[in-house]
Length: 219
Image (cartoon, rainbow, N blue to C red; front, side, top):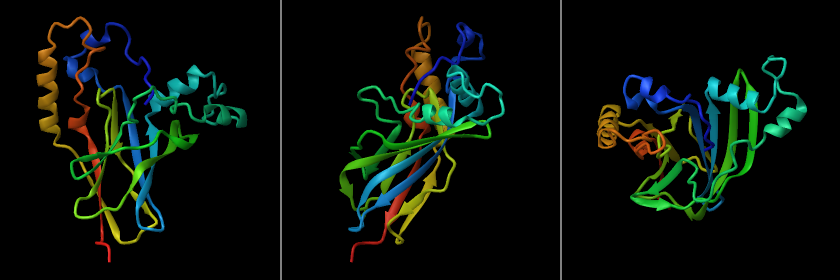
């Protein structure tokens, strides 16, 4: 996802312990699994609804909504499309898919949309599987997390299953106490680092929420 400097210089050191410096951006997430006519999962549609502060900063940085009525003009709506889709090479999109223990490759984003309502930017994008997946004995697992924990993702929307009616989706939250211990231990290892913010440990996976999709066995 995009990054922006939400923390003024020196704020990290002034806060009550390094752990409170992350995350900076909060995103409510929705997941749609798209199946084809052969009952194979072929793509995901991901929804990101950004927190009010981050949304305001993006809109203001682009000199939009000058009258502060919370409504973008038609031209502004066109201009804001894809604001978060300019990904650096190798960026995994903060969406990670597994079947069993095997990671599944995804395409880059396409078919994106952006809306602005109630003070929040909400975007969607589609990512296609390099190889279509037929969920079987092992569930299809979609995890949402930023490895560097700059952004915190919450699966706040009901998962959609498009193209099949014999599948179920369950959302699981992480063990936050265990994740906090991992975070504190990782930060302790970097005690005294001159750039702990820039070199924040990659512990985001410990906080990952996930959806597990299971389907009826093929007939």
